[in-house]
Length: 353
Image 1 (cartoon, rainbow, N blue to C red):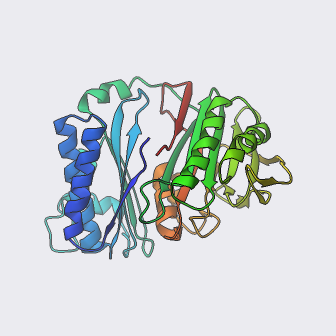
Image 2: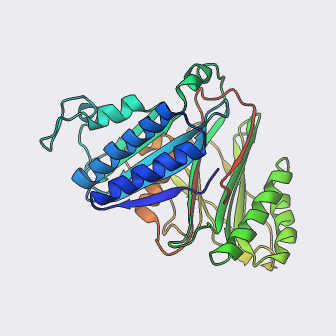
């Protein structure tokens, strides 16, 4: 997966920039001309809404894959505006609070193969769209259940072309293993360290969190080092096993509580005093969140009324919008148990530069 493209949207000239970058991304991942056109229209409508109603915000573009590994484009539109009191009404054609024709949100939903929206008074609006070739839609309906789903955002330090953070995921059967690594500093040296951690992770996905990080520690001695954490979700035992070194933050959210997960200080590859695994209970509706210190707070979903039920990528987008520091690489991954989604019994993914 390519590094996400982030476009700040504060005035109308940036709408065109976001559209051009979306078109380029659509071409690069092999979308046909019809799908490319849908990407352009979605971005134009969403970015225009950010300028008109959202008091500025962000468009984040990244590649994605459906359950049959067909490539597509994922569009996140995030604003900090007043939010919507009645989202369902705003999605109906003809409804408008700004004197327009009121077809923007409805058009975005119709043009998308996958659509999710979160908005509440005082909490802005977040829209998630995915676009695939139309020929893949029939294939998507053939999928079976998979146990876990996740979404992530990993964005470089402002001005850098590569991200010093990385995430990776491996799901097989009813077990999922997830990594977030933050290379020391930022730029190429940090990216090299993070990539090394992800490469080790992908070689040993059957291991528990402690031995995975022990192997990362050995491999990272030739790099500047990294902070990293690994979480293993075991659905059969209803537990999460977690091991962290350095400033990766993990939290386990339920509808009633947020439990912060424990990491030990250190730098993989250079100064680690202790690897220790901590075990937490996993409920059927639990959400695991792991983030680098490019986000400024421990992630707690309780202040966001209704967000808990949404797509993991949309949840990651809201957290990124509200808590990114803007002066470091920033990564957040959100994992939850899934309803019918995929025909895959094994799926390995990562954010690569």
